[in-house]
Length: 175
Ligand code: 5GP
Image 1 (cartoon, rainbow, N blue to C red):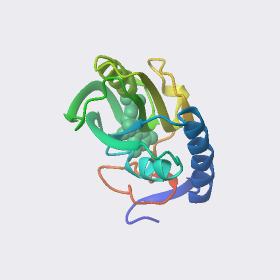
Image 2 (image 1 turned 90 degrees about the horizontal axis):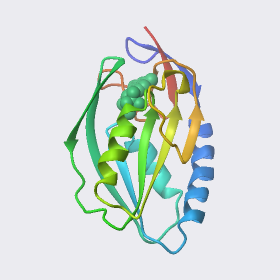
Image 3 (image 1 turned 30 degrees about the vertical axis):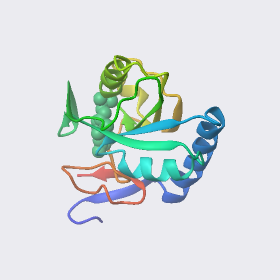
Image 4 (image 1 turned 135 degrees about the vertical axis):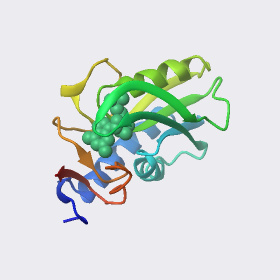
């Protein structure tokens, strides 16, 4: 039980951390000796981003955030709006977009198109979760944590009406 919600662990904190250690190593090995700008998509990716950057031992790693609003209730509207923009230019930089979950793919598609207009040197995507059954547009995920079924999940940054982001694991929400 989590307040008035019943949650069930889908991916444990230990499983998440073990996968992040692997992804971090893969990212670091592809960017040795380079600067890497990791861009977290607010708010859902804040926890994944925090753990992921600690697993990427690059001295020239930087962190920035981009805020989007695309989601009302549990259905994607397809309308994406930037609510908080990057603090720095990414022109000529190696950029890693860090997202919590790729559901329909519309948010990442929009962000990739938007960031491409800023002329980064390279642009890659890390996503903790992917729900392929819901994909409406194909998006490349260069570094993926887990593939999940078409279920609404919460925790580890993901919310239900603003709550449950603080769970250390990914959970199914039973309502
Ligand atoms: P997309 O644009 O790929 O449909 O959706 C991306 C956003 O929808 C995610 O960043 C996330 O905020 C939200 N989202 C998609 N699926 C879920 C889910 O199962 N649980 C929660 N809490 N948010 C989701």
